[in-house]
Amino acid sequence: MTIAFDRAAYQKVFNDLDEYRDYCRFEGKVFNEKALYNRDDKNWQSYLKYQNYLRAKSRAKGRKK
Image 1 (cartoon, helix red, strand yellow):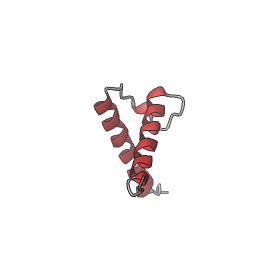
Image 2 (tube, rainbow, N blue to C red):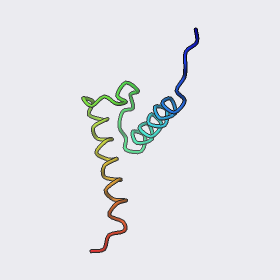
Image 3 (cartoon, one colour):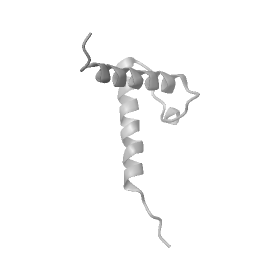
């Protein structure tokens, strides 16, 4: 019996972990791997807000005032 590996899922987790680590490093936050996908963690909440900010900023780039 073998275990089937889902390469895309593993890549997503490790890419998210790298992005979260970079965010913590550049923003001076404490990096803890256990905080990944934990909505109760304050650093993870601030990371999600930062991601939403970047998404909104990129959407508004093409808009005219």
